[in-house]
Length: 181
Image (cartoon, rainbow, N blue to C red; front, side):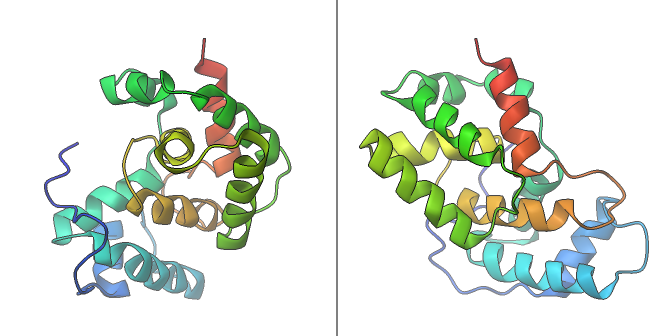
């Protein structure tokens, strides 16, 4: 996946609305029915969370794709994944994250903050050593803060009736851990 249409650090104005997200959902056949009120809320939230990180409609679609498609086996085959997993305490981060996510509670912004605080305290690591394993295991890709926003949309999307099933963060971490050697 090319990252050419994704801005660094969300540094520009957000030109996207829920209608842009809805258009992508339809174009990708992820939404095959008329949107429910819940779909409209999701689309608005997705535009607000991801729009600052997309340079154009293609960039927004790339970020949304991470919500709708997840393949841990494919993610683990990339050189970037190998580099992340070779870092200090990366597997410890993933193991502790998995233990935390065993409880089937929606992964909200507050829960994300809670898990980050817990991991910082328990493992005494910060920055990329902490966030890259989280992003790799839950978003399926190595990257920066835009992936945190993707992760925040996953459980919300997983609860809605889309044309394809969305894997929750709990399902994603279990899939990811089952493939680690």
